[in-house]
Image 1 (cartoon, one colour):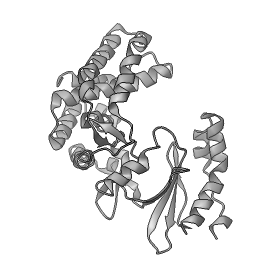
Image 2 (cartoon, one colour; image 1 turned 180 degrees about the vertical axis):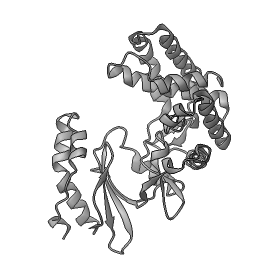
Image 3 (cartoon, helix red, strand yellow; image 1 turned 135 degrees about the vertical axis):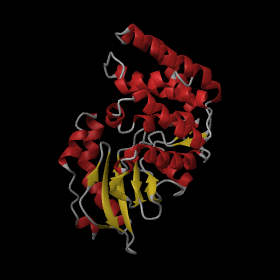
Image 4 (cartoon, one colour; image 1 turned 90 degrees about the vertical axis):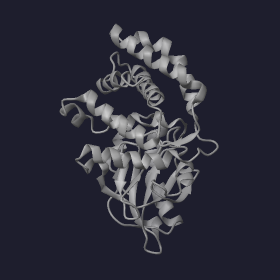
Length: 307
């Protein structure tokens, strides 16, 4: 029986929760029992070593009928709470398919993709952006289901935080840039949209599959304007963007590919992308940073050419 199987939690994964407080440490301590219980409940057999990211443990498994799958275990947080709801809405159309879900623990049984081959393996950046754009266009075509977090609320909260946060940046030029980001969001909040956004669709969150060549994973669903979903693609594989020697040109080429594929108004999309720079900077300031992230500053500067 699955209960006799001891699921080992990788040390590196446990360490990633070391600073997450008592609740995170308690979740890690309970994780082997939680995993064993899910294996037993869904009649699953372990089928390889565990994998993990920063927040989730992923176990390759085989279902009773022989179908390969993965068991994803993640502490329920505000970011992960709507993942199953979003995957159900997409129903495998451009995203990994949800096979089963335990709402009490947030554990998901998912179709198995090729975890060794992400979109980052596509060296031609124009081709990689095209693949991502085509997937994103399918994802954002779906209306957001009831209960998913709303961009309108997030944007209002950002605008409330911005005046107090801007002075934390040391450089007056960066302060002005952050105020411009806030101004762009203020212009757009009246029409924040209601499409289903992935919110974290970068190259490493797109994996090769058998059912389709590429599928999105790890959504943090949000109801909003698709322009707010572009940032992770612009920021993907940033080292290669810098190495290209033309950061602004590469960012704008990606942006134009994305907006064309999604049929977005470029000024509006650039404004929401400035909103993502604002959001990320507010998080950085909360963590004690006093300078703009270089990627954020570069993307914001490029977006001003389209705004």
